[in-house]
Length: 410
Ligand SMILES: C[S@@+](CC[C@H](N)C(=O)[O-])C[C@H]1O[C@@H](n2cnc3c(N)ncnc32)[C@H](O)[C@@H]1O
Image (tube, rainbow, N blue to C red; front, top):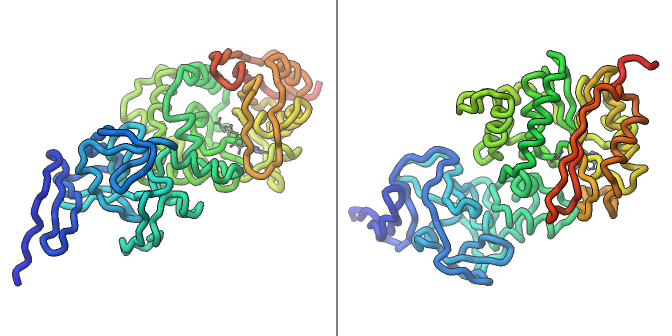
């Protein structure tokens, strides 16, 4: 019997159409165009918002589920190796891996759904198949790591296991939107980078999954080591280093860094700085800044050591905070540059991994200045800036410091 071609139920746009298999009635969305990774494929919006999921809804926040407009987008099938993703922040269907004309478009349902109204046994046949699909609530941490998940899912997962510090959730929470504080940070760090001698070796302590502070260092430093206490936190960094699809997009930060440096923020220059940083990053290391040698058993010293927003995350009291900063400064060579960023007056505390800390240190901007005097720093080289936080922020100010370690004991 000659096979009938699938019929087109509804051309969604010039880019997508829904086809119906004449034999089994199976409906699927297919691409009418070639699409490159990260390209938007179709916008969507809420035809209706509800508090509970149903078979057709898409979850867009911890408490909201929408009926999709256009409705045909809700006919996109699930795969455990999807080629598309509902970006609920930008309200766009995004391409996750290269799609060619005629390819079926698939999404990973738990990418947006925490607990689906109706689960099913997946038979997508991929090597990574998760089996039963009931929502992200059922996924193991390693299954979650392998997929691009919406920010609300990452946040719900982090709440489910509060000691789990999720790389992607952190990046989406703090680095997706460029607020005005970044302009001040980059202005400070770009100026500080001019103090770094060529060929310097840098270490970023407590860097988490971030790369933003490394972009201003990339031109001056020959190598940059990244270190953090939480072992799995470099999953996103590794994806970015491997140029993997769906890795976090730092381009808008690189653009701002280049603008701050007075370099034309062209696509070529942005890509060039990204490549440069990929070349410069040498090691991803475990560290504990609560130890006198945070890199123990490694014995290394650096020309540049940074501690951005990590010293206050690793201490409960002013005393402990002073020790933590001293431990970081221990890793500097004589004459080396110390870059420190600290939030003062922290009202919200976040537990990182298994350190059993229960509160943030009660720091004021003057504490930071006083403490620098007790370290082996050349105070004549000190640059310092205090950025008051807007009233709604859970801290009162950000203090930025750049200072060189003394060259000789005097
Ligand atoms: C608020 S995040 C800051 C991350 C990044 N530096 C930034 O600017 O966004 C605090 C970081 O400190 C790390 N951290 C907490 N305790 C630490 C410790 N004892 N040793 C090293 N890193 C630690 C956490 O894992 C986390 O990555």
